[in-house]
Amino acid sequence: MGKIPTTAALRNWNINIDDVNRPFCNSNEETVGHIFTSCSAASIVWQHVSIWCKVTPFSASTVREILEIHDHVDLKGPAKDVLHGIIIIGCWSLWRARNGIKFENKQVRIEDIIREVKSVGYLWISSRLNARSISWTEWCSFVSM
Image (cartoon, rainbow, N blue to C red):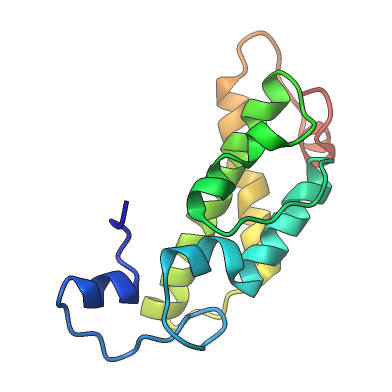
């Protein structure tokens, strides 16, 4: 919807931005699509998520596609919803990492982003389950969803 304040969006809103480079890969102008779909960091995160969730590796060219990927994988029932939550957490973690690089000069490693996706996802799923709990080991193996 054009509401995420990337450097391209800020420039379109007539806000002067000196540094328009992409924080993860430091080339060309930063767009929403690049941050969440085509950036090498995003690609690695989504590759890891697909392996972890035991689905066919996926890619997307738009944010809408990445947010709807759970509808196009071979998961059933609650596992589909869990994957959707993981995708949203993945986008949030990529955005937080981007901001850490851009505003705090942090060195961000892909492993840290993936670790955050798993840990925040575990907290989320643990709070959502009513009848039973899921162990960290089950969560990391993506079993019993």
